[in-house]
Structure formats: C-alpha cells, structure tokens
Image (cartoon, rainbow, N blue to C red; front, top):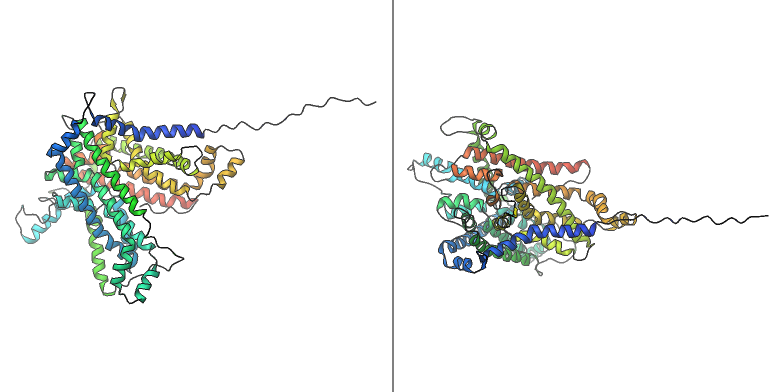
Length: 570
C-alpha cells in the first residue's frame, strides 16, 4: 500500500536586490557643479546691480563714465589683439618649418615649444624682468658694456606696452603653433601635388593651397591667444603696473585694495566675462565650420619641402624663437638663483634662504602641493563621473552636466575669484581665509580641461563591455569602477597630471582668495617680486618647473608597466 506524501514546498530563488546609486550620484554631481559654477556667477550678478540691498545700475554707469575704468578695458583689448597678431606671425612659419620641411632637429623644436606650456606666464614675465629691466636687465647691462652707452640708456624696456605684448606672446604662441602644426599634418599631399602638376611653384602652392586649408586653425589659435592675454593677471601685474598703466584684470584686482569696492569689481567683471564667451563662441564657430574640410579617400603622406640653401636661415629663425621663449628666460632664472649681486662665482645662498630661512616657504609649499594633489584627485574623479554620465546618458538630462562642466572655460580666473570672494565671505558661509575656498576655485577652473579629456577618452570605449557587466549583475557605478575606469587608466593619469600642473601654477583667481595663512607658491613669487628679491623668486620658480616636468615625465612612463604609453601632455 503506497502512501502519498505531500509535495515538499518548492523554494523559488529570488534575484538579489540590486541597489543602483547612479541616480543619487547624478543629483549629487549636478548639485556640486551648480555650486561650483552657477553660485559664484549668481552672487557676481547680484552684487553688480545692488548697493546697500537696493537695486541700482550705478556700478555700470560708473564703468561708462569713469575714465580710470574705461581706459584699462581699451588697453587690455589692444594688448590682447597685439598678442594674437604676434603669436600668429611667429607660430605659423615655425609650425610650417616643423611640420612640412626637412628642418634639422624638428623634434627638439617641438619638445622645447611644449616647455612653454609648462612655464607659468607670470614666471616668464619675471624672467624677462631679469633680462630686460631698463636699469638692471642683463641684456641692457651687456649692451652698455659692449657699446659704452650711458648708465641709464636701455636697449630694451620690458616695462612698456610693447614689452608686455612681447612677454605674453612668448607663452601664448604655442597655442597657435599646436593648432597650425596639427592642421598641416592633416593636409593631404594630393592637392599640393595637383597644384605642382598644373605648373604652380612651391611658394604659389603654399599661398593658394596649403595656407587656406590651415587658415581656420590659424584664426582659432589666434583667438585662443587673444583670450589668454585678455584674461591674464600675472604678467600684466608684473610688467604693466611698474610701467604706470592698468589692464582690466589688474584694475579689478585694485578695486579690492583699501577701500574695497566689491560692487564695482563685480560690474567690471561681467563685461570681461561677456567678451570671453564671445571669443570662445568665435573659436567654436571657426573650428566647426563646414567647407574647409578635405573630403575623399586615403591621401598620401604630407608633402615635405626641401629647404636646401634656406636651411641656415630657417635654423636661425627657430633658434631665435626658442631663445626668446625658453632658453634665455630659463638661463636668466638659473643665473639669478645661483649668483648674488656683488659676489663673484656661484652660490647656493638663495636656495638656503628659501628653504631654511624664509618662514613662508614651507607653509606655501605644503598648501600648494596639498591643493594640487587634492584638486587633481577630486577633479579627475568628478570629470570621470561627469563624462560617463554624458557619454552613456543613463539618466534623463545627463547632457546638462556636460554644459555645466564646460561652462567655467568662459570664466576668467580673476572673475571667478571675485565671484568666490563675494560668495564665501559672508558670516553664514565664511570660507574666505581657508584652503576650502581655494579648492573650490581650482576645481572650477580645471573642470573644463579635465572633463574634455575624459569625454574624448569615453568615445573610444565601446559600451558593450559595460552592458555585459550589467547583465552579470553589477550596478552602473560598480561597472564604471571595475570595468570602464581601468580601460581609461592612461587618460585618467593624463587628466590628473594636467589638473595638478594647472593648479600649482594658477595665480589669477588665487591672488584674490589667499590670506597670510593660505599663501601658495605662486602668490609668494608675486609678493617677492614686489620686493625685488629675484634670487628667491628664481629658486621658487625653478622648483615649480622641476615639479611640473617631473610630473609630465613620470606620467609618460607609468603606463609602460601595464598599458599603452601616455601621449605627451600639451
């Protein structure tokens, strides 16, 4: 007799509960970007149209009627246009020599021009003070000894409008050079060969075929140089103020001297912000135009022009440019660091003074490298997450994050400094005088560059690997951490290094936000320049350069341990 047993209960395995924190991360990231970008601009706009809590346009009326405010705008625009023209005039022929001729040492020329990117412009201006100050400049002293000129005669005077344009162009022409050289590398030889077959000579082909194809790159590079000059604070403060004139960035800074005029500084910042936006839009329009793009199949290698008898002249031109922008300034800094006035021979006195006697050095170095490391780490993480959100679009409205992350590129450093000062100097949110306000400033300033690099890297990663990880049960954030980020390690390292170097050399926003306890190396250099201590300045400047070059070299070698080589930072 069989006894029927009751069926055993069947347990149905439930899928594990998977909590995806991507949406909360999206809202947190959006809030952070709003705080970094929108909040300072909102306070800037508020202060520009209020006085004692009442709405007024008096600040803007003062901008129009006060000649001491109008004149710096005009000088700044003239200076920026001069820098753009000079940068284009120098960079275009040099780019052609490097990219399209058999110039000897082309790789060395490219490497030395890259050094101009690493050199902080304010440090370059100080180097040219050492070289071309009317009384004590090395070039003027040598000229007087050579010609027997009077003690106060000067061959060159860096404290002038022309000197300012020249000093800034030394460190903006690489932008034009890079764009034009890359444009020349992409110009196919087919069109140039066709021009030669039709009987055109080399100069005619260059003028009618090659240059029109790279004209957009020339214009875009010139606009970048103009933008850099217009928004720069360090070089004008070092060279223009001793010459007795202001540009708009130094004028905005002066409005915070006693008695401070924050409302007027805010109003003066907004036109500069508007001009910056227009210049960036112009650059985007030029590079985004259709009609100059070469269409067709695979083309031949770029056509190389034989210099023949022109080789010595081309080498002389390249050597002159590199001497004025890299070799002479670096030699001047080294001489000032290793010698003392009135003492023969080499000495390490300035090194001993800076590192063992000067009380501000250790704190400034600690603040600088702490902020550099923190900004690079946090900024790279924010840029990575933002680029992921925008490229993969996992949450509705993610594209707005890309707009917020890119927006600070249109905010000049001095304008951001004004906005942050007005935002975080209230008793309710007093961050002024702390390292936190500097961290916020650096994260905002470096965000566009970091985001653009990471966004470009995400374009080369196919989402299929991420989809497979999701199918196997991983959340989106876990997939980003374990799958996508390791694939992007070289880009992450490059972004970290780029942000770190940009942080330790920043001065425009920093000058308004530091106090005695939060001084950075860049601000110490600026303060020492006012006292004329060129030896100590040179030691600190050389230290910044060595750290920057060490970071670039290390970043290019690290990926060899487990991945492809990192492209050279530009």
